[in-house]
Amino acid sequence: MGKRITKKDLQTRLMLVHLSTHDTGYYIEWAYGQPRLMLKSDNGHVDVSPRLSTGRLYQWMMAFVMGATVVNTHNREVRQQREDALPA
Image (cartoon, rainbow, N blue to C red):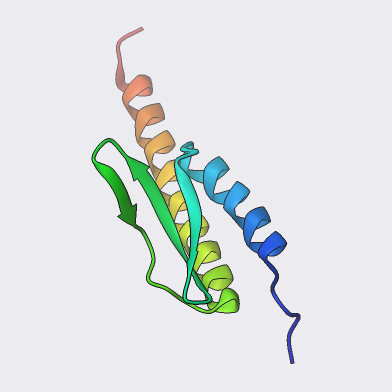
């Protein structure tokens, strides 16, 4: 059986979301005993994840961070290729 995931664990994972997306608008909302990841927007709030158990949201957020990291790496590589293609 795995380690019990606490609210503190989710807050730590939330910091990784902020770092990987370069956006501090993400937050965890709790209702009905279950958390979900939310994002503040100009028009209110956006549900980023469904309501999940604490352990499932922890896993979900790690997948989200990994996806954001892949996108950031790809964007950085494309930007570098464009800069390399410019005349000197």
